Length: 421
Ligand SMILES: NC(=O)c1ccc[n+]([C@@H]2O[C@H](COP(=O)([O-])OP(=O)(O)OC[C@H]3O[C@@H](n4cnc5c(N)ncnc54)[C@H](O)[C@@H]3O)[C@@H](O)[C@H]2O)c1
Image (cartoon, rainbow, N blue to C red):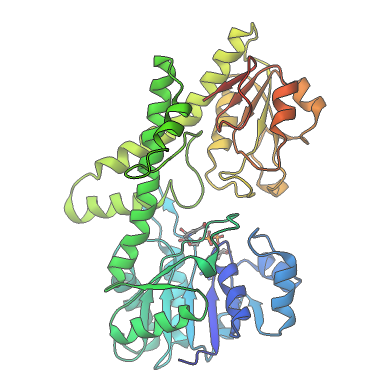
């Protein structure tokens, strides 16, 4: 297949790496985004996604084959379009308005033989039941038949240097055999391995299985951690010991909760659909959500108790949080449990300071002052809380100089002043 013009709708964490990879593979790429500021910055070579360095973006722009734009009219004459817009929850209900807007925007440019792929995470049935009718009515064409439509879940893991877009197997699907063939052929140009499945619904469910599996297992370990603390057993050592079993066990680690655009949201797409279509609860998901949501409050209370033990009240205590991002080595604060930990500590009366080298200043939470990680800041704090375990932090220095460390990630050497979650 000879796809020449690609349109990627949404130039965020998913869309930008895809667009740049496609330029590297020789395609002519339109990077479409409604955020004019983002597009302007991309056009000048400024990347806000860790996985795409400014140098790499600069090389893509220098080919003359990467065109960031806010205008749908620039999609004119496209061969393939990939939709990577957000799919958030609104009051616990899937909000597909961005997918609808993207479908309505690209629909008029769909021609006979073109291919459209949805990558946004969503409930099974979205491609067929929501996107297909939109594209059909906007284009006056039909799929299957006139144009090809498919779904391919994104597996991007921001900040992971080992597993990148090109070496992570990519699940691909189409509404029919012809669409699958097109979608598969396109991604084979970008990634080392594709995994074709029989239907768009299977591909949509694949993504939800992956994230639900993680969300449920993290919740299991988090609940075990809370209970083990009360039983006075070192859960971290038990997990490490269990992890020596060469089969039948997969290690998940405790933490201050789950965050980002995936784990707190994607499983809810599945439980929402099960409720809507079957009138039943997806109990594992609901339970896991409850447990993970309660973790920031648990962390704040453990910090309060730790301060009390040292004869210090949390009221007006100076608490230094290490990391605010939901995930290490990234600056992504979306739904970060660290932000909730900060809020809970402030509710208890603490003055909250944070070290967050990666986040953009305008994304930082209210009432939290950002400071650099220095010996003086560590000494000044009544408590230091390791929330996001960025590799750049000097944990030895922190453990040496802090009066009290509450470590939710087990990064500091355990000692008399260090307490683990
Ligand atoms: N970030 C991840 O690690 C990750 C991993 C796997 C899957 N996903 C899924 O991929 C999808 C995109 O996530 P993301 O993290 O890239 O989001 P993002 O917010 O980083 O980027 C989405 C971009 O889409 C733009 N946009 C919104 N509506 C638009 C429209 N109608 N036309 C053009 N552009 C529009 C936004 O301005 C934004 O720049 C979501 O469904 C998410 O669940 C994300």
